[in-house]
Image (cartoon, rainbow, N blue to C red; front, side):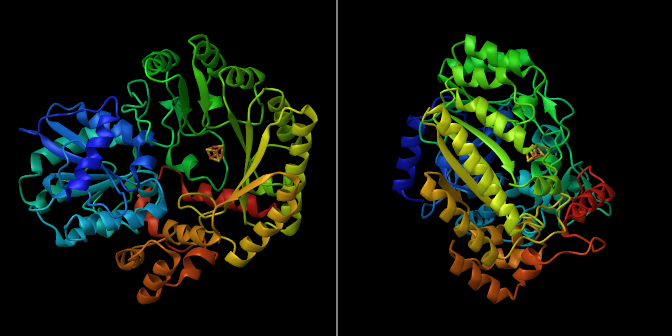
Length: 528
Ligand code: SF4
């Protein structure tokens, strides 16, 4: 730990509002670790929620730590090294952050694998969407993994940790393995670990705790409006990892908004399906009457409520994002995105007159059964959208965001392969050549990095060895690790898996029956 890191931590603290500083005396110290930069992590509402929740316990002190490449990891609040903490709690949202998880463990001076650690080391635990879907690639590095939502697991888990942290580590791990939603790879139970979720959000407060200008969404006060999603897109991890859909009560959101508006003019309403909140129109009208500027993380195209759009525009929304996901009606049926071309174009027509600055359209590339005709339909739909915007002469900028399809554990498409890198590159360059000359900005995620994501997403414990040998965060570094461990990338990313074979994440009971996923897959295949 150097003086530079301490100075940087203090500089960040000085620019924050809402930080919780506690004396360590007699308290269980927990390092809450986001395995990416401060800039990225401080816009993650899950991190804020855990920070608030853990610090609500009198006998716990939770401090944050982030991975800023090249810097020794210390906690932000008291600038202590991770080895000073009793518990290291990671929240893992993206597969590509697995690399950072390993670097954090390596640089903190702890033995990398859980089996090599004992009671003289911090207890290392993790949770988050990636862990809920498929904990296997990271399992050997963690003492315990949380399969589900913090509100549902931590009330039982924290007393067990507090009571057992000073005793024999094996005893603590055995006690943790008996708790609902906790997976301990050294003491696996003989039935799948049931995913846990909070039955209601009435008691949960999910909003920004610490405000800082030094983060991606630094001008927003974030408020969770709902969690989960009732739609059934067959590729979607969120749908399956966070079901059922639950909403925060209107009066609670408004109370949070009142608190937030004391610090920020703009409110960010967060959720996978914000417009599906049963009182969304009333909510937006009231928020605007309170003087809030609004940003909404998701918007629906069927039906697109004119009141929702109007209130967003009046609430100074600068960008509106729509996600048709696929260009042709056939491919949208395959993925179960239940919107027609008319729904999409009518939504864009409504949006065109609202005075926003930017419209983003999200599509996936390489979806199962995708053909050149589907790509042509995507281009056609984008050009029609542009025509509608141009006709109104409002100067709305159109941006196309493309992400390669990556099969996710626990979804109906978990058995399907992603497209080859060559196919993705070819289609991507064709789309760019057709749209960029027309003034449409095309942004795309890298096919090669998406392939790594696919391998990790469907990975098993063999991936742990690759992660441990991945020395630098580059494609070349990944390939070296893969070659050293003789991992068959093609098997994980590009092969269709047999529906009867055992899956790495069968140790999890997500709450969705495998028979249902298979039925959904069959329905998709019937549209090929
Ligand atoms: S893609 Fe969006 S709308 Fe579809 S199921 Fe997932 S969260 Fe819901």
